[in-house]
Image 1 (cartoon, protein in one colour):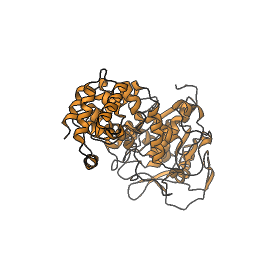
Image 2 (tube, protein in one colour):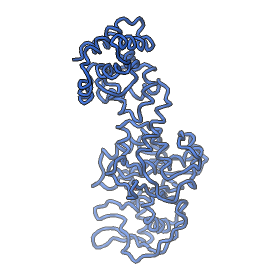
Image 3 (cartoon, rainbow, N blue to C red):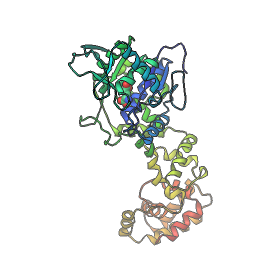
Image 4 (spheres, helix red, strand yellow):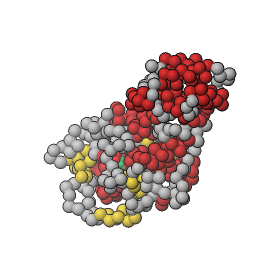
Length: 438
Ligand code: GLU
């Protein structure tokens, strides 16, 4: 809920030049949490002034990733708001107006190449950063900063500052890679006679080996989590703990917990260490406690998209209660369910070879089929007793029947409990698979 009286206005300002990186998603999340904690306003601003590098796919990845993570924006593209438009490509007239202000004050001029330059003081600047503490950048002797290229397009620093002014941004929360840009941003604020916002630069994300995380690293793109079917609330939880700590000895924090606890003071000064396994573990934790109905709602479209022919009726609660303990991401459910929901399923050739090397499975499977055929009610206790009877008749241990039965029914050596598999397949399908296995 946005409280109109709250002065907090923050923004996520991605450039649509590639995928949505986990670092970007974390920046969006910290801004969103800060806004929600203070009942302020979270703005999405698309920084698309660089025609050469922007792509429609990158633009789509931002919307899709933020929506998947449940990071809703109060003002921005597709939503509107009083300080729009929210795509920089649509704000040229505003930038021209600000440029005219600089020119009128003789703070900007056109150079020999046709670019417009700002008479940047380049003075020493102390940035009172809310995370990094006061950081001093010495004055420089640099050529005047270009603010508009000869082709008419504006430079990032200029439009970024103009928009933060125009959109009434109170806190700039962004990656630490932008800290060295901030002195030049302060020069612009000063030129416009505007008090700058508060700055909070978030430390970087590093790989386990200490190198800076790049877009080529596994787990770098939010789209990977979407397509692998991680639990989005778990990814949100994971990203929140990547460089921020509520100083409590636990790992699971739901969205409301995070909003209640989030402060900029809780952001750690050191760089954050990325750990994809931990994210997977957390995702598993979220699935483990999911109620069958919402789990089914999340799972079904995923399975369909993965090519499994299934329906809600083919996924009873009992099956989902077992499945939820076995997966860390929805992609892991696909091979587990394939043999249970359709007749066309992959067979693990190595497992079949192992089975055949032990003994001829045919008599074992026939004995099982006979025992199952006599079962009164097709449910776990009776099925289990039937396996026992078959083993007794063959003079072998019950355990020795499990593996052949599992391979004949599902083609896989792991997966659900055998009685779950039998219940799920039903009498006809199960007997058919046992007798047809050859
Ligand atoms: N478009 C810039 C980026 O993606 C935004 C920088 C900022 O948040 O001020 O890095």
